[in-house]
Length: 100
Ligand code: HEC
Image 1 (cartoon, helix red, strand yellow):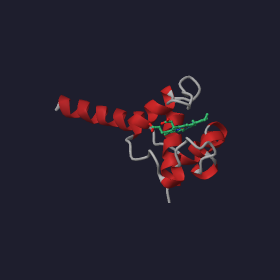
Image 2: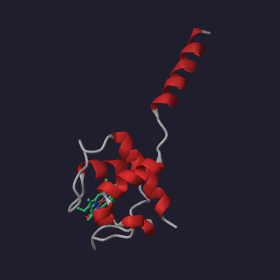
Image 3: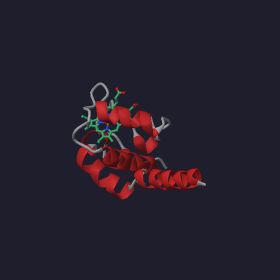
Image 4: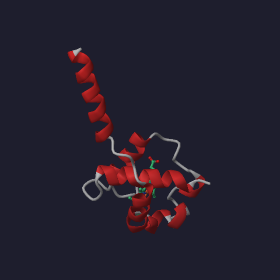
């Protein structure tokens, strides 16, 4: 009985901790920080940058994308300490809307 209450409380905590990603906020962050290279709408400006409009690199799970965005990759700078984890999640949610 006590266990059931504890489990219910833990489940509630888990759902509030994982705040839903907001692609509309992600769009603003993208246009300010990422569009210089990745282009508006995910059509790259920089030749070596992947095209999110074509869904390039987006086959990876969010955890791997977060890692690349926080730590950078080759020419791409890392955004650790610039964007918060939740903001990165919002940007990824936005990136996932670009492939059409
Ligand atoms: C200075 C240019 C530049 C900026 C600014 C930039 N990127 Fe990139 N990005 C690149 C390049 C170039 C690559 C390809 C890296 C490689 O694989 O060599 C890349 C790769 C990526 C990838 C694929 C990583 C992977 O693991 O394959 C993601 C996702 C990404 N960028 C997201 C973002 C986001 C989100 C932002 C803004 C917060 C951003 N980028 C800002 C140039 C940039």
